[in-house]
Image (tube, rainbow, N blue to C red; front, side):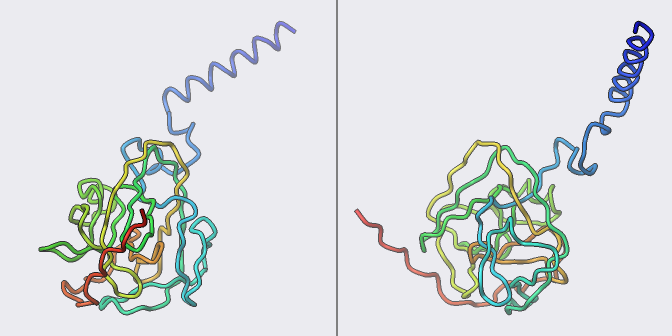
Length: 214
């Protein structure tokens, strides 16, 4: 019995030494995920993704091989196949409320197609984190700016609320050719490389602010 105990103690000591020397052995994910400074840009569960046929399903149910609605380099709607998905845990997120009563629950570095008084292109709540996460240069999305939806309407951002809460998130990590998709009807980028987009696609004028009920 004493000999068995000594063997078990020796095994545990060896495991502890290995963990101290090679801390990544304790991580079940890839090296990118184990980087404490690496944050994946994502949406919260329940976010509706538009499929190629126009129907919508929650992002957590999108699977590799599904065909979603995307856009080409001229912002024309096209089908595209999902090649890879991911679902990292995050410590916080934002609720972005828009004038058409849609709420986007998204992490602060996720690129969305936006327009402000002097800019049109990819934007993020925190551009410095977007460039670090994906290498995509973005402008800061602010209240009063507009996001582009799948009907090519510009919808005003009414508010952005920061929520500090650990939560499971989801992202369509790789999409063939375009790496873009529509989340809650709004054009989003998934961090992969995409063709350059025109600076002025001239969609419809910004939609007017929706009246709020008292």
